[in-house]
Image (spheres, rainbow, N blue to C red):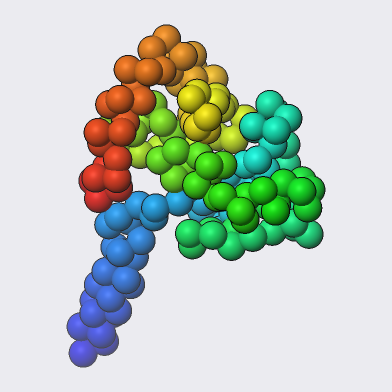
Length: 150
C-alpha cells in the first residue's frame, strides 16, 4: 500500500510540473520573478538608446508581467502606449524565434529597428542577428506566436 501511495504521489508531483513546460508564456520573465525585460526600462531603449535598469518605485503590470522603469516619465510613456515600447516576441530572443523556438531575451543584447525593440540571447547570437536583421525579423514574424506552443 505504501509503495502505491508513493508512486501515486510521485506521478502527481511529476504531472503537476508539466503545464509549466507545456507552453511558454506570452511575455518572457525570469524563472524566479515576474519581471519583463529582466527589470530593465523598455522606454529607455528608445529615449536614451541604452539598457537602463528600472526601479521598483516605477512599476506597472501589463500583459501578465511586471515592467519597471527608471523614471516616472518613462512609466507614463509606457502606460500610454505599451505596445510601442514592449520588445517584440514577448521579450524572447528574436533570433531564436526566427529559428522556430524560444530562448530568453537578454536586456543587455538589444537593438531597435523600425521603431521596434528586439532582444537577443547573448553577444554571439546578437552578432549573428545583426548580419541580416530584416531577414530574421521576417522569419520571426512568421513564427510568432505559434512558436510558443512548441
